[in-house]
Amino acid sequence: MEAIYWQLPLLFVVGLVAGILNVLAGGGSLLTLPLLIFMGLPSAVANGTNRIAILCQSIFAIRGFRKRGVMPLKLALFCTPPALLGSWVGANLAVSLDDQLFNRVLALIMIGVLIFTAVDPLKHLRKEEITFSFRRKVVLIVSFFAVGIYGGFVQAGVGFLIIIALLVHGLDLVRINAVKVFVIFAYTFIALGVFIYHGQINYLLGFALAAGNSIGGILGPKLAVDKGHDWIKKVVSLTVLVFALKLLLFP
Image (cartoon, rainbow, N blue to C red; front, side, top):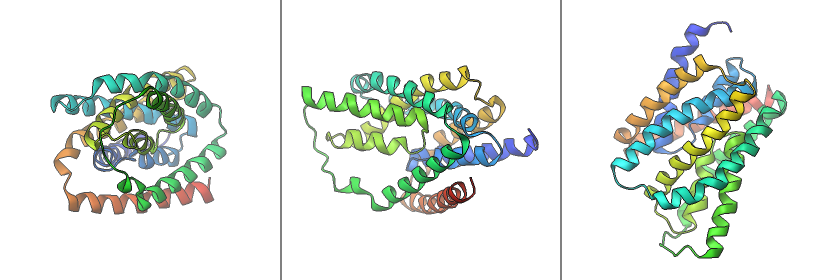
């Protein structure tokens, strides 16, 4: 692979931004996954390589939530098994998909996430604590199986699906984010295993990206101020739109 030495620092910097973004707003993979593809990696290899960064960042995020005592472990453990199964299904689908088709699907997902964040339908939901009845538990199982399929397939934007899946049940965003990072950490093991099995990983680029993501995950909470959040969100939205159009029009 040519120009490897300039790619490593670039991946580190973008990974740093993505890590901060994942803490402030979510959607860091909307930057890192297209970048890996633009660097010349086949779509499946880019998808698998990105999982190394997600796994490493999740470790730091879980540690942060546990230190602050806001990890609802029982709920996280309940949501994880269906996500694990779904992740295996999604990752196997991703490794078998044609590069050009995957790039177009990714572009449409990126545009969809941009529309979702612009509309922000979550702000209208009421946040009232409710009891998890049998029916609600069934809904959670089905929801997180679907989350796992999506996360195993592409990862980018999966945090928004998890937020929706839990916010409608009345959880506050702090605990939702704690459950989110736990579930993502768990199912990423399965997805990463599928990509490793099929030889769809570039470890050097993956660990360069992971280093940036991990540091971004540590720095993110310190930078979570309103003005910075809004500015970063606007810049990232514009960047994601440019990446999406390139993938869609010039796959």
